[in-house]
Image (cartoon, rainbow, N blue to C red):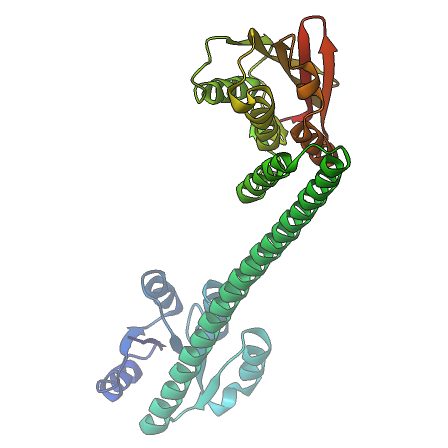
Length: 341
């Protein structure tokens, strides 16, 4: 419900106003001085104030100036006589007045002016609410647009990653055909490629070397003949890194499953080592070594198409594979440059 405050130092005028507004659809408050009016404003949310210009102590101009500082949205109406024209001009310049009502006033005209003031107040309030809602909606649309742009960038990035992976697959197939390695390897590369694309594992994320070791252990559990596989951690810390974590894990598991343990090959021993070396204040090199003790699978492991495909695939992402023949077998070194967080 709207609220209107009437201020006049003459009791008979306030009584006349009280009788005149008794049937109006707003709650009326009455004050005989500016100080009393301000006390009412402390407790009530007033929409319209109707104040006499000439009052002892605090006159209408001072009161309306205080009212404006308290709540500039309160609509201000002045009751005044012809002799107070200079004060009216001051009120216009200093406090802004919605309506001047000259004495003696007609109650019906006064009521119409108050209704108009309340309508103005309510329309202005609705307009402010609409502006706030529009700003809120605009902010929400901006956030949605920003999210859409981020999603679009991510989509483009994923599309670019798919394109890179597909090109590397085609290059690998050409290499297989050129080296007359057989169709089975082509099917093998296609299977790895599909798994790689479906998992969307090209984006950088947070990880620790302890987390990597746990992942290695989880991979080993998937193989029935694992008693000959040993895992060790050379240097590590609780340092958190950001890098192509999922991509290096995918590469590791693919090499272990599809190259080293292909078709159930069992070697004398497989060692998995993880090494964490600081390269500078901001970065570190994370190295994973697969050391395979074997005397008969060296050439197959070193020239396997999966190694060829993965080696080409991960280079654009700052990862690398180095395969070397050792005294007692083969070592496969996966390296990743990671950013400290």
